[in-house]
Length: 478
Ligand code: NAD
Image 1 (cartoon, rainbow, N blue to C red):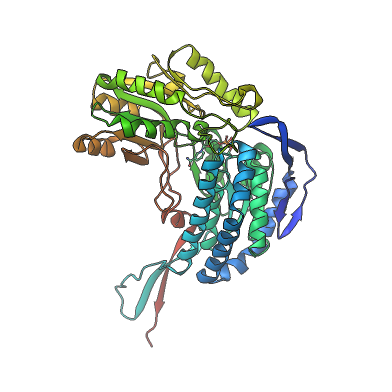
Image 2: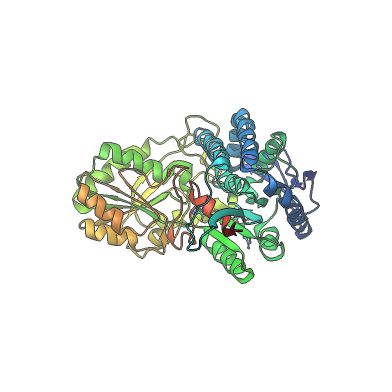
């Protein structure tokens, strides 16, 4: 398969550099070819989105909703195919990838229904015979920049609310999710989405992504990716007075108190830390344990990690597959080197030859201080640090000792300690006896501190971002 751009309803193969995508589960296998765009391609996409805006914004919400229902139906009919392609492109195990596609279908249907929901307020006027009300109107043309780690769900959790609010889109997916993005756009065309409403441009972030931010006439930007890139996105948007949202990195902690039920806690820790090979912004990368439970937890983790099935992403038994790319492998491996100098608590084994793909074995280490890079930096791989704490006070203080603030969890049977944690943890998503990942699509998603700008995604929160409020007043007296 080869990537193509979808601009103004036309499929165009850009003339830039070509990149071959190798399957991260099996480096010998070629999955497809990326045809990278040049700056002129993204400028064209911006113009196409601008041309399509009036027509799309002029539809009723119900009509836009019908388009989203059809997109959901076509995606559902091709769910297996899309999941297989994404697993082969970026290495997420097929069992998880299928769940991600289902999330995408649910998101499309959730926002489709928003087309006929109330969108404003009637506000009593202080004058007689004046009707005063608010309504949401679209932002206009929105730039959407997405990462590779949720190649289906993240684009949809931006595209669906943007469309239902009446915006048109220029979408630049991550390089290592571009085959999946191309196929998704093909399916949306099959679903009858009008040309120009969604424009797909495949290319590198630092050229095409940057030109989208700096040169295309945009009214909004929604970005998910690393904090370093997010800071740049925010600075450019602020200087152009473009409404923006940046969803960025995390360094999420799970606190385990002495009274936690390890039978349910350990599976939640493993899932948080190692599903998707730790490549979730909400992945658990710090496990903070009350000292009196330290030995019990360390031993339970040692046993459980040993049994995790590390294999090819298309093997339905795989709990975790490889990391997504050679770049990712090199970055995560630099942290594995640091982990190898610490005390090893647990390490998994692979069911495949680890050298056949970008495999990194799930690892838990201890003996590192609170300022160590393994405890402070986002690893974005299957490596977690185990940190002892004297009590719940120290545990919450450690949890908050990070520049990030995306998600945090506590495992305990003690209601008052759990509620204290919910109040005091500096994170946008806080969970009791639940893993740090897995927030549901109908609830607001986002972080505090350097994990996020000041908006939320998904649920009703996304509608606030993709629209602006108009205050209308009508004097109807004679
Ligand atoms: P990244 O920042 O390298 O890239 C993200 C996107 O930005 C890609 O499409 C990339 O091409 C583009 N980009 C890169 N440089 C750019 C530039 N100068 N101008 C415009 N666009 C540019 O991130 P990644 O490696 O793709 O994704 C992993 C990161 O994403 C992790 O830090 C993870 O925590 C974060 N993430 C956050 C959330 C969240 O909701 N908070 C969700 C998923 C992933």
